[in-house]
Every structure is written in C-alpha cells, then in structure tokens.
Image 1 (spheres, rainbow, N blue to C red):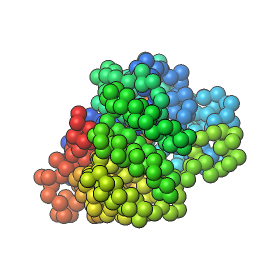
Image 2: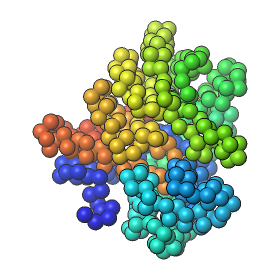
Image 3: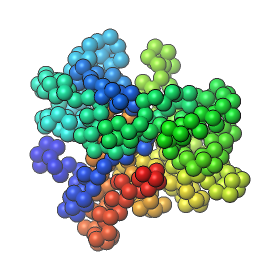
Image 4: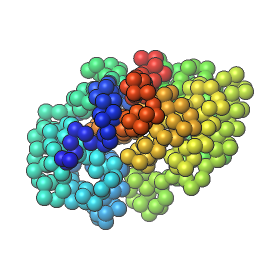
Length: 397
C-alpha cells in the first residue's frame, strides 16, 4: 500500500463505498476555538510554522514528549526553526493522530504527498510557503467545504466578527465558565445570552472539572431550556498540572489532562433534578474527557430526553479513541442519533479531522456490513446522518 493513499484507514470494500458517499458532505463544526476575525479578514499566515505551531498545544505536547527544548516549542526560536524541529520528531509519532493530520493537511491543502521528516523538511517548508502566499484562513475553510462554524466566545465578547462570511455561517457559542468563576451577576449574564442569540447563537458550552457544585450549571441548563439553546457539557478536565510550566508559559499550552474519576452518579442526579424542575431538558451534548466513563454516560443519555453523547473529545480523537466512541455509543446508546465530528481546534488547517473521522466511521459501518451484521443498503444513509444531517437538523440550518 502506498504512503497515505486514497484508501487510508478504509478497511474493506464496503468501507470504501460508504466513504465515497459521505466524503464530500459539507462540514458543520459545532465546537471550535477559531478566531472569527481571521475568517472575516481572510487572514494570511507568514509561513508553515506560524500556521501550525503558533497555538497548537497538540503539537507542543508531542514535541515535549520527544525531548524538544521549550525554546523550539513556545519559546523565542523562529517559526522555521520550530517547524524543522517538529519535522524531526514527527517520525516518532507512529499511530498518533498528529501523524495522520499533519500528512492529510499537507496533501489536502498543499498537494504535498511525501512523508515529513528531517530530510524532507526544507522541501516541504518551501512548497507550503509558496502555497500559503495565496491562501488565507477563509480560503482554507472553503477548500474543506465548511458550511458552519461555531466559535467559542466569552459572554462579554463584542461579536463583531461573526456573520455570513464568503458563504460560511460563522456563529458564536456562549461560554460562561470564566463568569461563573468570577461571580458575574446572573441577570447580566442572561442579557449577554440574549445578545448572543440575537447574533445567531444556537449553542452554549460549559467546561468544568466535576460536579461538586452545580448551582451555576443548573442556571445555565434552565436558560438554555427556556431559550431553545443547545448546551454542550465538557467535563472531567484536570487543568495546568505542571505548575512551573503554567506560571512560565500560561494556560491552554499542553499541560491539561483528564481526571482519574468523575461522578456519573452526580451527572444523573443533576439531569434528574433539572428535568423534574423544568419538565424537560434542553438538547444537551455530553463530552467526558476520560472515556473510561463513556459507557456510563451513554447509559445515562438513554434515561433523559434530548441528551446525547458527543464526539470523541480531545485526548480521545485518535483512531482507536474514535473507534471506541462509535462502538460504545452503538452498544449503549443509539449510533444513528450521534452528531458526528467537530474540530475543538485553534488551527485553520484542522478540518482534515472531519475526513479522518469519516474514514473511521465508514470502516466501522463497512465492517459490520461485510460480516453480514448490518444492512448494507442502510449504511450510507446512516453515515450521512451521523456525518452531517443530524447536527444540521439539531441546529435548525
């Protein structure tokens, strides 16, 4: 098999057939950390190092794992020096999603189909640099077929960069974590949520460690229910575990991990309480960071209306992690109701993750068909639902 050929991650004939039916579907990215102004301005990147290494903590973490000095990660070295270091360590990342994503980005955006390593780094740098000169952030999204982007925004954001930009719907997501921590007045927060909705917001998001104090979360669930906003709950994070690195480099820099335990009992009690009080629930999408708890979360989703299990999140968006998520949702919930992939990314080239996901989804369903365990005639329709139609319907697009 050739290096990263057209059949990458497609395990059988049925997988290839299903993938052909979903590969060109538009992309709805309902959770990311992109800068909407960069899309509005069609911002250009000076070079491959800036594009890849200016804010990607996935790559930073991988470089540290391979012993790269921090000067080449977040430090004072030039972007080219950082790129060359990344190229040098990339061959060490066999099976890591970064190895897939990096080469998929090179191929899809820049028509570079050679392995990136220390020997090819200069050639790749030159070829990508030449292509970048005529390609901005919005251009990249258009190449990937992105239809809808939900950025993640502080409640006090001005939201002056959102709108319909070059055929792409760029909409805000209400993210109140900081305001809860700082004790911002709830009446003011509700005014801000109404302002977000007036700007096309259809989603709220709350990221938190556990369920020790749920009063703020209860308020958010209530308001999402009242206003018809979808709520995404990302939980089980253990932030900034390296204190020295946090104080010298800062947050969101690759020093967050997942909790060894979360209380799924507390999650069930919270949903039960709010369902009883409100008479129902908003549409809630759950993302446990430690996928040891995925079975329990899937089971809980079946006990309440409008509760779904989200994509394999963060540390779990690997080949095996996505496969595990598909298998677990299929066995403990209902795979056909799943809302598919998202980027959760700050990188404009990260939309290859949708192709990555669609290939794994096609292989999972294709293998069931090949073994006679699922109706082949239904597989493509199911794959379209998961890859595109379910989230489109949920957002009312």
